[in-house]
Length: 409
Image 1 (tube, rainbow, N blue to C red):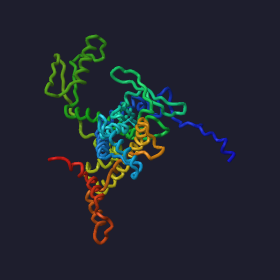
Image 2 (image 1 turned 180 degrees about the vertical axis):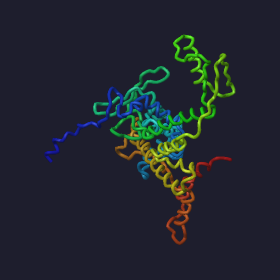
Image 3 (image 1 turned 180 degrees about the horizontal axis):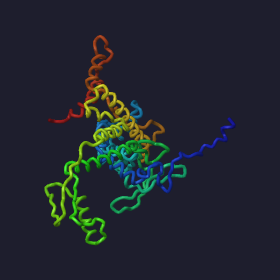
Image 4 (image 1 turned 90 degrees about the vertical axis):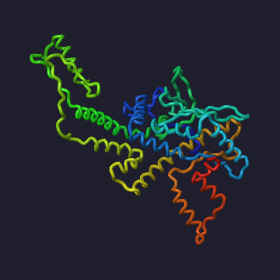
């Protein structure tokens, strides 16, 4: 026991995060570092069809998740009151909880998403007015301690570009990954960047090639006796004029050329088949992009291949990954947001457990599977399940029937 007294209880080592002056330098590709990287990730999310498809799938699936509050102790009356208060705070913000979750999902594109908790007094209590995002492109610098711990974020944005400091104690930081406690996490698009880069360039070349194939390659023939190598000013102007016509000519409803005497213009047809099939190459990159986030199922059927069993297996893995991310989102609320909210109202959880924000599971069994399961258990021969009011309420909630019970058609 004597030897344990000499152990340093404080922090000795560091995470190894590479940073300086509030900027993180973990990315080894300069193009994906800092503000340049954020612009590229936004381009990938907004311009690429496959990236947009799986981000849209992620958003819509997670939006279907139902969030509620569970008391810390189901048998304690005060715990139930705490849960009711927390649920009221969630429902009384200036934005819906579903919209907040959608904003949080921007962390998938950038690797992180920071939110400021804004409070207001109402009926003698302090509640959430809103939990508002502080956009990734407004990041000026991180405030990190000597060991790389996150203390806050400096922000500069529209309309006055005034520098603001956001302490982490008032904020919620959502990240896809906590490698070395990096405040910027890691974008889920990072592994698909190389495929995106080559695919983008091939698509641009393909577009130019298609235009040239359909319209022909422009050829402009100079008059007899014209010296292309002449250094005279008038000859150089003529050459520049000819280059401008060749590079900018378009075959559309406004097409037309007026040429000086002696100059001849024609469109040369593109010869034969190309050596490479760009469609196959682009499809290969599409598959690589989709597989980086386990979303390869969105490619099934595009090539008349795949089966129902394969699609179900792939979507199950995708749902499992999403469920892990939703669990992470919920843990941030329960670990940081809920204690702060109750602390501002003079309540602590030293005596009783705190309420928890919980969510339904992603990728639940279909109603047909649930019906078969319940029917098998409630069978007279088995009699392993009693269909009481509690079971009926659960099944109605599962089928989302209660959400429409008060609606007058």
